[in-house]
Image 1 (cartoon, rainbow, N blue to C red):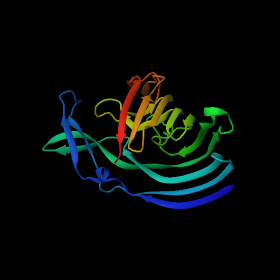
Image 2 (image 1 turned 90 degrees about the vertical axis):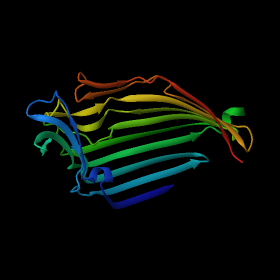
Image 3 (image 1 turned 180 degrees about the vertical axis):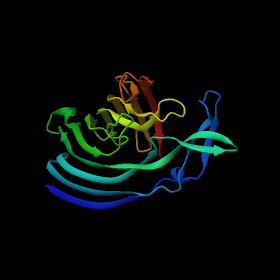
Image 4 (image 1 turned 120 degrees about the vertical axis):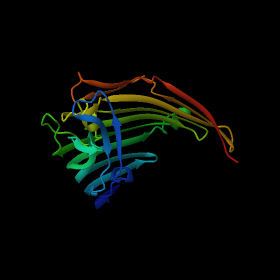
Length: 267
């Protein structure tokens, strides 16, 4: 058994694309008066993001190739970088533009738990001894000061409250097969989406909960050649995004199942 405790203070600087003093403008005849167009701008005055991280984990290797782990975590993130909730008026060559600029928005506090188990089935007879299963689950609770246009909290971008993975695998050193189902609850994809050109009204864009089943396989012909195969999204899951309320659909993607077959050569 292993018990680990970690504490760290992390500093993350904005990316160069966020810090650029440049601006991208576009004109449109459909813009409401008095605007000639819209734009997006970087912000060289952005502050770095600071975070305090604390975690406590427990690992138990109860038999060969099998283990159980649990972890508690806490993160205090002082800010985030995103296009601000309200556009800025800027004038160029006498024309007025509605410009969205990257800003430091409010930070967030995260706390949660991670559970994971891997069980090798090497006690089974015949080829079944090469099989196994694994599962993990993560729960995250958040406290944030970011508010949307309706005065309600906006979760941190890309963060799901619940997520889990279920995996079944086979590996005999020559053939390996992995079947995995990954699921996560809804999450914020963009914090502030304008409700129309130059509009000061915004709502967060949410990606709906989604689960996907994938299959990967590798067959080793010899030390020089290996065959790879994958089938992505076997359950033909779709991606859907909406503006806070499920009735306000903003994007739907149905890519179906994708298959890949390849050969790897090493000399």
